[in-house]
Amino acid sequence: MEPRPFTRNSLSNILAFDLGKESTNNESLWLAVLHLSSVFPIVFFALLLWSWKKDQSYKVDKQGRDVLNLQLTMAFVLFAFVMVFLLLPAAAFMMLGMDTRADPLGNIFTLLPPLPIVFLKIFIVYQGIVNAFRSVADKPVRYALSIPFVK
Image (cartoon, rainbow, N blue to C red; front, side):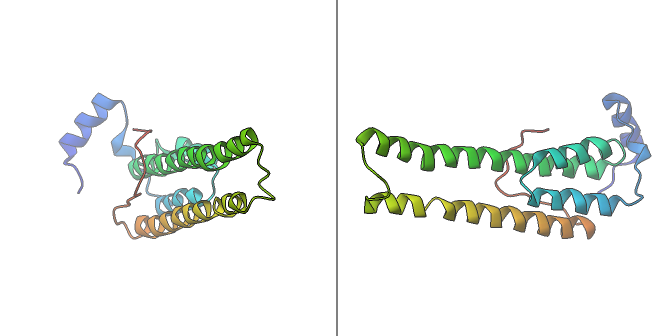
């Protein structure tokens, strides 16, 4: 839904953001690139692309925030996962003097951690590809499980 011109001009003046100068040249291309950048675990690429194009298009600004929120959320989830499932059991085994290579229970802990990382990566790739197609088709994009860090 597009806002009325009066509303757009009022918001533009209050926010000091020129909503009237939306550049739709290659907008769908930049949106697709932005969403596909979430496939790679490098937050800086999406951040650079968003900061470069956010003033030129409202859609790039809004959807770029969504991409950044997903990437930051997944980075925190991955960090928490590594802390809880990799470092804590390893520290516990070392404190107990257990060798994870000789202990069958330790082998389970060394085999299980990659599975959630693989599922997390599949989820991120799926979200990026689906939202790239949704943005090109001018449909609303949704990133499930993302925390709104960038508002």
